[in-house]
Image 1 (cartoon, helix red, strand yellow):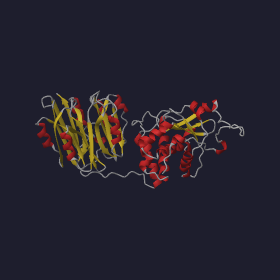
Image 2 (image 1 turned 180 degrees about the vertical axis):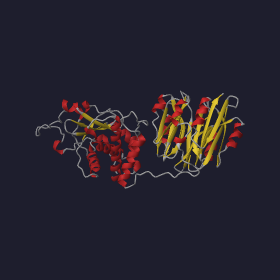
Image 3 (image 1 turned 30 degrees about the vertical axis):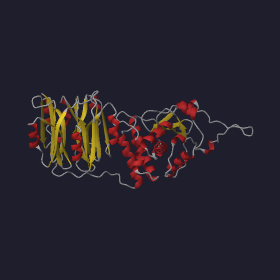
Length: 486
């Protein structure tokens, strides 16, 4: 398709009010300029922005409202509205330095779409996709058509409206011939809060899902989520029957455990001084394990595709590294954490087969396994380079059909310690590491394996000053690994 460049979106949708701009000559009557927006028109405004912040400056609208035309812009708007059989009736207004695009209504009776040319171009460049401009434009038109710009709202209602406009955008783009990736390209290129509790805009993953739902609706695809088959030899956990309720986790000193049917908000636990350490998603229920004094700043991302772009972005922010990676409920779950001013080199690899060769190659270059995950038909292995923060000296791994308690004891006796223990792809993956500064005289580690949720073990170990290293659930068992410096 022809690439639409929104910096040229300066057009009038109401032909009755348009006039061709031209230099007056002695044979022509001077052209009447657009009327300035009156003070009363500026007093009441309703704005729906594509991203956080950057609301339009109404003085900018007053000074820069343009009535020139653009064939590309007019054609894009007509295409979007042709899906619904409607004619265009929006005024486009360029507004620099707002770093956003917004649907706006004023008391003058017109409906506006206000945009920052640089913002639109930056999104297009970042996404390297021809559909981004149409996607953003469709989103803002969706706000107008669904009446979102006719009333003021609180943050909760605003988040709902944003998802409705995102869904409209996905629907329109599918009808225009865009792929799902095309339809989500603009949103993928734009940063959003992952914790949206106090935000006017939903978390990015929610917005991507809304676009997908709209796209699926247009394509005739059923949006009802498919059920995940229950793994063999695993019984459903009855939380109500536990001897120690999950809510009692607040009595622990070093840990906080959050449980919820939907992925829980982490803000309160973060504010209380805990950081994300691990999570388990089992039978449509989340169990998130938070640990005190585990790193500093954190970022959490959930994505349907392996989050390589997010990893690259966050590596550059506050020297953060991958500290948790899982695949749950059809999504990759990534947590990255900064550790003061320490710079820790890191790499990752993905492969449909367990990457033995890549592990061997990484070991030879002094990179050691620190995390592993399996999902969407692929293995993902994370490596840290040995250094002054975690001076690794040796490492082993193994995959086992049965829980490898004998192998753990064998390597404990050599003063090696568990760094990864997960039930992945139907087997136990065990990684044990030898450290330069750890041995059985100054460091201790303990694992617990239970059929029921291990709250009593967590509290017992917490009271003995042990802190969580790993937690996993599979093969009918919960397994936790906790450790401390003696």
